[in-house]
Length: 187
Image (cartoon, rainbow, N blue to C red; front, side, top):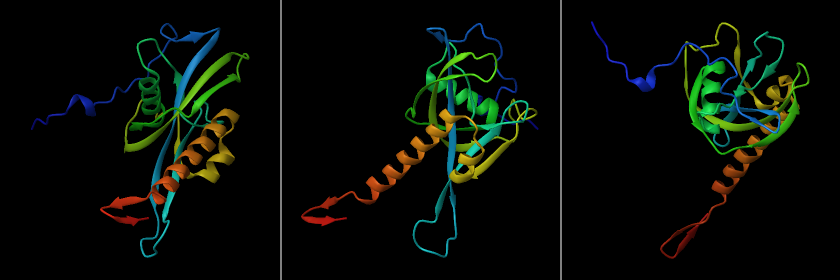
């Protein structure tokens, strides 16, 4: 029996490697990443805010640190394309890459290398069972408080705070919008 698989559903089972295509700016390596997130639906018997924000963290390759997926931005990609690729390679999730959370400058843990990092939210739509770095990384869904505790990079914690504030702001704006229907105002 033969089954058809669309090209969009195929996943390269090998991560990109090498630094020949890496972007640098003023001596700083350009890196991009995502904070993958979803809403966990809570107790359906209660009315109200029963959705809990969850974020996906991964282990470093050596398994000693927890962080959000990120990696090199290459010359043949946009920032969002690179962030999406890195997230799929390292965390095995795909989704909608949203507007940039910010740009940070930081020193790497090894050799004091200088980096410029960009982080994006990624609303997860698909979690893959097989992904390129599954043999070298663990992934864990957790609530924001837990992520604040385990994430060891200050700039990623700051990006998480920006995401939380953005999502709270969107929810607040949505809840407080005034809808005009004819001459009736509803809130």
